[in-house]
Length: 562
Image 1: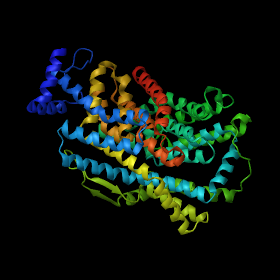
Image 2 (image 1 turned 135 degrees about the vertical axis):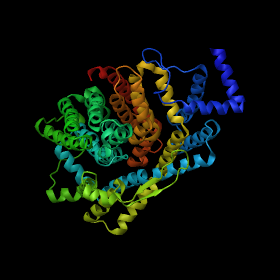
Image 3 (image 1 turned 180 degrees about the horizontal axis):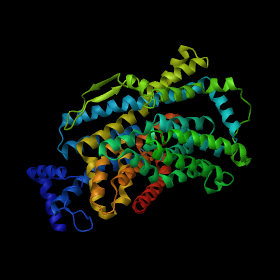
Image 4 (image 1 turned 120 degrees about the horizontal axis):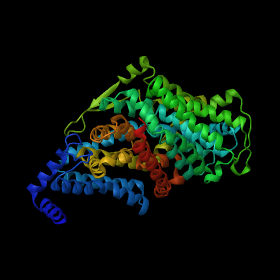
């Protein structure tokens, strides 16, 4: 077998016709439904197909391996490492995958468009809001209001990273759930690296229901699965992590398991405040409100518990004096965030008579010209970034900032994010190149083939891979949703909806390690963490593996409960 594989490898590389045949054959392999099977659902390939797949997977993995090595080991600045990843992806797509230069150029251009609108639009708006609140000194008042809830930094971390982060994910998504809470925590005196880690961890489980559940509704429409059932299974898939997340947030912020002493009860309640309402809402209404409503319950539960079960441990006390804030002053200070909530709510699909006409203001532009190309749509008004900008400008005027001051803050925001812009554009371009060339699909195919009937334990890994590359749960579900349902059809006892839910759960896990998420968080917190990509990646990697193990075990054994 080894000699046969070596022969095939040499022949494929040195015989142009044979190489072209290999490319066509490996990309003609269906995801799973038509693959030959042995008893028990074990998928088999011919020796030639096996060699082709291995060769293509090795090449496809190179951009990912470079990002891991470049960022975590060599400590190359993110914008440089991600730019090199673009070059590697482009070369492999053309030289190994047989894609045309112009076609891949159009794929890269679509990646630039996606990065700018809406991703960079949202992150710029979010950081501008944060910088403006700092400039007007409103953050000092917000800090006083938060410490009036509790002077315990563990409680404040739960309130911001877990509760408010879930709310931002449910309403807006696109990185706001990490960017805004992390920047607020840093402004309140939290360690910047720990703030980022806590928010990355907290953002995992709300992701499948982010932006009014767009990842879940997209998966259902793409695969033909029942939306209600998919929402319920996704809530079930995240059940263990719903409880785990707030405990890890506390431990990251306050220094390990010992930090849970005195706040174990409120931490458990804050986890249950997501798990139970999320599940019930998916059953009764559907997934669209599965994170938004529980996030409000979480924040309410934390505030109530903090008032009833007071903890005065000086080791975890905030370095500030608790001073009362009158209602009008508090509303004025929080006005940008209040308006963000109001604008995102009334322009969302929950209010169709406003959302529908605003969403119709769009432009569809043909950018990618390859097979299956669709025009890229720019939604000009009904997009979170525009609403956040509008809230920030109005909120800033309410707080007394002049127009010149507003635009000065905006200019400094743009300047401070310049390297973040390069990083995110490069990451999204890499994702587009890997997706359109077939690299990402080949990696997933190989995992399905290699694991056979044990694949359900690795289904979340496929979702995590997609989110690591694309930084988006929605894109991950579009990319791998059909693969998951097809794989389930070939494995006895597996449910297509369960593996689709595993893909969504894995996407949330993958976002915590995604270079795009890390770049967003660094851009949000500012220069104090510039160049710390390797520190953040190493700090989050252990939690990433832990989450994959939990999700994989639950996916494999949990399907028996269905």
